[in-house]
Structures are given as structure tokens and as C-alpha cells.
Image 1 (cartoon, rainbow, N blue to C red):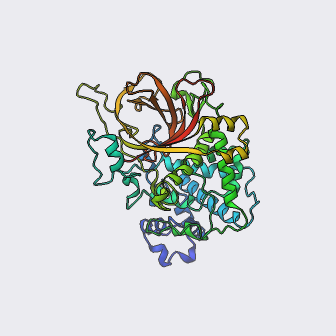
Image 2: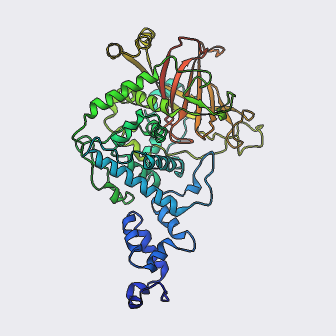
Image 3: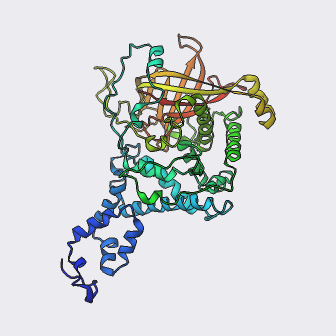
Length: 497
């Protein structure tokens, strides 16, 4: 290695400066989990600062990023990521997100009323970073040994035979790098001061927080007794596990009960479904008037409320599964958003030659379980007539049931404004289509009889975790005729096999 003009004159003969630059960069990459150490190394002299921050290309930052995360260029999304990834900016942005959450989680346990960032700029960036991590997770192949069951099997037999939850994403010995990192960020919960922002509609970070809750639930900071330490693996950054927050000053039970009450007030509001919302948890894109999915986007505030309601029902419905069954934390945070690969699946030999688009891109085909919640109609009317009075709420009981569902693709729709590579999928009971922001809309109908001539109920929801996620979709259901006074409820449908 030749001496650099930026190298200190009295240090040009030091052994460390004799190392080839490739070896020095390899050592820096080994410190990918310790960004503070990389910054300290760059500050030792101008030569090493130039090595880290003024490289001719982005190869060092690319290697640092890929040491901890999946390659975003391989992500499976409706809007493909740019091949020109700014590796240094992405690495530093994710480091800032880690630091933000860990600092807020720690401060919460000591100063319950603090507001470290009133402008919420850091919160907004950190939340956006978490969502980008989900969007850029590399799809996992199906787990070995999970063979599809013959369609001739009756739904009743499948109900008793199949597991309650998919063995596929949760049995992975090596979850994707990005999901491991995501898990370690949200493992200790959402900082309570960030959750308090849910009531401030003017905060531009609030929609991002609603989306996070819809994806992962409302898990606030917890005490040492409530949750064991996450298991350490070679892939888990030790620096993210240092300094566990201790909660001593906030009644979390009362806080969560209040949030659940507000969620039920939102979910069971009979006035919520409107034509502009497609009678579901959606918002219309400004300036557009069509009823196509491409002109709407998810209403994350409503979906966050749905998530709280259906997760409570999930915990109670599957209480016998134990404290660590897959759909609740902490185990679900390990690999909940493992996505399925997109495999062309022609419907028949006479199918159009456009197999690149006519495929089961949403992972629809298979066996699912569906959890549905509702109140008796009289109780639902009482709740709405009294503006969800707490006394009335305490005297009525939520009903829920879990049923198996088998889905298969029967056709495609290309002329509804959907992206060319992601046409609307037709199933025997509904549609799966793409919303304006790349989220996946699920529409399902149920009928008055086996002839399927008259629709009785309609379910509208959004897939959580990205395209093909086995975590499935959450949403709301109501009457298919959309009459005034139709009942309303929530649902969560997840893939089993």
C-alpha cells in the first residue's frame, strides 16, 4: 500500500497503514453491527475518513448494508426498487431508526411524560424506515416438506387435519436478515410517547404509526417479568440487545384497555362504511372518482383499530396454543412477513400466453383460516345509539368464530386499472387487487345459499406485510347490499398451507 498524502507523515510507516485497502475495508465490514465503531475509526485520521466516506463508488457501504440486510433489489414489490440504491444513505437511515427506537424505549421507562422530538421528524423517518424494511425483505422459498394437499379433500377434513397456523414461515431456521433486524427494533414494544401521538391528527408521523400497528399490533414497552430475552444467534446484532428498558411508572394494563376500547368504538361504528370508502377500510385518492382499487389506498387508522380487535380475539380463541403461538408476540415478530415466491400458474392449456402476469402473484391458492368477530345485532345497535357508552360496552359480549377457507384462482381482470404485472385475481368468492400505494386489497363475498346467486355479506381488507405474506389480511365485513343499519364486524384471514 502506497503512502497517502492524507496520511500523517509520522505515521506512514505504522503497520496498520501497510495493510491492503481491501483488507482494511473487510475489517470495517465486520463492524457493520457497530456503526459507532465505524465512525470512530473514520475519525482517527483523514486517510481512514476518506476510506469510509469518500470512496470512488459505494462498494464499501453496499457491503456494510448487505452484512445486516437483504438486498433490496431482490424484493418482490408492485413498484420495483430502483437498481441505483444509495447504500450509504440506506445504511445510515436504518441505523438512525434503531437508535431512535432504542432511545425512546429507554427514556420512556424513566421520564414517562417526555417528548424528545416534538416535531416528530425523527419519528416519521424511523417509522418509514421500518415499513421500507418490510417492503424490501427478500422472499423466502416454501419450507421443505410442506406438500400441497389434494383439492379432493373435504373442507371439514382439512379443518381438522391442518394446523391452526402455517408451519412454513415460523419453522425457518434462518429468517431473512432484514426481518431479524426488524424484530430486534420492535421487540421491546412501541415507545409509549410515540403511541400517545395517535390522538394528534396533525402529526404527520401518525399515519405511519397506524400502519405499524396494523402490521405488528400495539406492543408497548414491557417489564422484565412480562417477556423473556430474545434468543441470541450469530445473526442478531448484540448492540441492539443492550440496555433493556424497565417500566415502572405507567399502568400498561389500563392503557391497553383504553386503546382496545377506542379500537372497538372505531371498528363497530355502523356509519363508517360508505361508497367513497368502497364500503371498506379505504380512502379515495384525491381527484379520482372511480370505484377501482387503483384509485384508493388503505385507511391505516381504521386498520390499526381492526388489528387491535382481531388480535385480542385471536389470543382468546387460541389460548390453548400457549403464550408463544405464532400470531402473537414475540414469536411472530421473528418471521411474520416471510413472503411466498411468485410462480406462474396457468389456469389451463388454453390460457393466454401472458403467463408472466397471469399468475397467482398474491399467494391466494391454498388453505386459510378466518377469524370473524361481531356483536349481536341488538347489542350493536345499543353501542351505536349510546356512542359506545362504557357501561353498555361492559354488559355486551363480542362473538367470534374461526372457520377454514379454501381459495383458488379462477380468472383475471386486466381492464380495471390494475398494474400490467399484477392483474386483479378472481376467486370463486371474491377478488384480490392492487391499491394505489402497492398494498393488496382482499374482497370476499358470502352467499345466502349454495347456488351463490345472492350475496349476503362482503368482507374488505388489506394484506399485512406485503405481497404474498402468510400473515394474511385484516379488515371489516358488512352487508353486501350496503343498506342503512347493516351489521358490521372485523376479520383476520391467514394462510395455513
